[in-house]
Structure formats: structure tokens, C-alpha cells
Length: 293
Ligand code: KIV
Image (cartoon, rainbow, N blue to C red):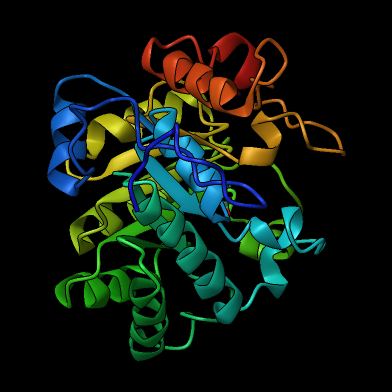
């Protein structure tokens, strides 16, 4: 399918045209490393379906996370704990089909859901295979310490891995709620140890969620081969991620402090996404005085 914006529409919506950035090559790990060494921030946004993924790509977002936050924003679950591997594969396939139809170039990261990788490296490999076969370029898993051997196992078998430390929503009950992690010396030292182990195991990306800004900036310096992507972690990380529904102002609950509603001053979803990309790249989002701890 071509991305001709003048073609007659199909019923129920047409996948939007390809990225307006004609020079943009497919996003790859070497390209992300290049961006980082050039001091260019990496943008990530969640998407769960074909159209939003294609619009995010067209708005210039480099990496799309098919997050298990879909459990909350799409399925109405109370947390991410109830999301199944089948559901993740379904949404990953929808996102990657949308990108293909739009000739999109974004890098797609898919979450391994709760219970799909904790038992063994072999179980993690089977689950990661399902998401890669659904079209993902990389899988994400939560936690540190016990996850390092699993990350190594996957990476050695050719699966790029993004780790996730700080507030890890799949274990929110054990953490005692959605709260900032690594505030005290002991917590910060453990986070640092886990991050270094994950880089050593081959994780190429690391989401840092709800971590003090100074700590995530210093972790970023300590991890030259693993790109830190912050959410509620200040502006010193290599990139930023937000949940789509939050940045579009569709969070019906209490908006987390680290979110900015990019829809507020823009006239379309695509423009809101483009404003997010611009703000991350020019360093105006997140503002440590407003969005960080
Ligand atoms: O599932 C998700 O959307 C995530 C982000 C909060 C990073 O993991």
C-alpha cells in the first residue's frame, strides 16, 4: 500500500501517510547509539494499535512501546498484572501492521507481561519469540538482579532487550504502591548495581521509572552502552517515554506529576505528538522543576 494522502479514504479510517521526515532511515540500535553520541534525545511513546502507531511515527517518534499499560488504558484492568502474553502479541501485531502499511520506520519495543518470563530463561525465550514473531524489534522486562541472567540468555540468542528499573508496575503490590524508587542511599546503590549488571548482560535500553533526577542522570553517565529512557526520572536520561493516553490528557484519574498534557495547546493528536518530540529534543520536557523528584 502506498502512503498517498490524496487517495480516497477507506471506511473506518485510513492509516496516515508515512513520516514527513523523508530522510529518516529505519530506526535501529546503531541509529539510536548514533543519536545518543550526537547528544540527540531519543523519543518513545506507547501505542497499542495500528493508527496511533502510524500517527506517532509520522509525528517523528523514534521508538514505540507496546506497553502492558494497555491493561489499564485499553482493557480497564486495575494494574498491568492481568495482561496476558496473547494480548501483548495481538497489540504488537496491530502496531507493527500499522507501521508497515504507513511505511513507518519506528523501532518497536514490546513488553513481556507479568508471568511470562519469571520462571526460567527458557520460558522468557518462548515468550520473547512470540512477541518478536508478532513484529517487535525488542522486548522489555521489569526488575533487576534475578533478571540479568535472563537478559543475557535472550541477548545471546539474538533478541534485543530493554530492561526496566525503578517503579516496576508489575510488582507494584510488593513495592507498596506507585512511589518513587531509589530515594535513600541503599535504594540508590541497589538501583546502580542492577543497572550495571543489566548493561553487562547486554540490555541495550533501560527504562527508568519514578527515579530521582540526579540518580537517573548519574546512571545515564555510567551506562554508555545502554540507553536510559526516563519516565518521571528527570531530564538527564538519554531519552523519554510517556504513556499515550496520559500525554493526550485522557487520564481520567489523578495525572502523575511527571506528565505534561501535550494536547492542551495543540489542535490534533499528531500535532500533540510532534510537540512532545520537539519538547524532548530541545530539553524543555521534562522540566526538572515540575516533572521530577
Ligand atoms: O507499560 C508501559 O507503558 C510502560 C511505560 C510506563 C514505560 O512500561
